[in-house]
Length: 153
Image 1 (cartoon, helix red, strand yellow):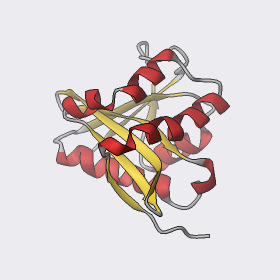
Image 2 (image 1 turned 90 degrees about the vertical axis):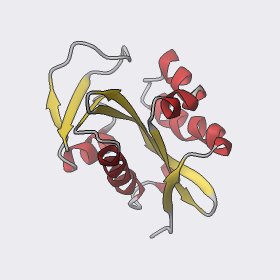
Image 3 (image 1 turned 45 degrees about the horizontal axis):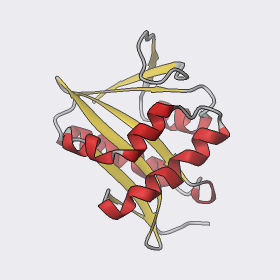
Image 4 (image 1 turned 90 degrees about the horizontal axis):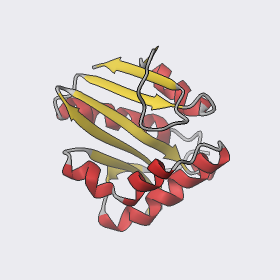
C-alpha cells in the first residue's frame, strides 16, 4: 500500500517525535545508549552547528527522520535514520536518504561518514544502495557501533 508523504525540515513541535521514531528501533535492536538520549533530547545542537533534521510526514504526523550534522572541512554525518514500523517499506527511507544527500550537497559537503550497527539491516541496505562503502574505524561516539561507512558526494 502506497502512503502519501512529504519530506520536510524539523520544526520545534517535532521534538517528541524524535524519541517516538528512534526509541523503538534502538530498543528492538538492544543498542540504546545514553548518547542516543542526549542527541534526541537536544536537536538544537545539530541545528546550531549548521545541520539539518529531515522529517517524513504523513497525514500531518512525523513518522520518519534523519539528522545531518556537519563536522567542517566538507564532512558531515547522517544519523538517527528511522521510520516507524507501520510506515516502513513505503519509500520513506529512500526519500529521507535522497533528501539528506541533497541537503549535504547544498551545505557544501563532499563526504558523508557514519557509524551503525550490524543488526540494522534495512538501514544498511539503503546506505549500500546509495553508494556508502564500508571502512575500518577506531573511533565512534557510540560504544555499540560496529560498522563505519563513507560516501563521497
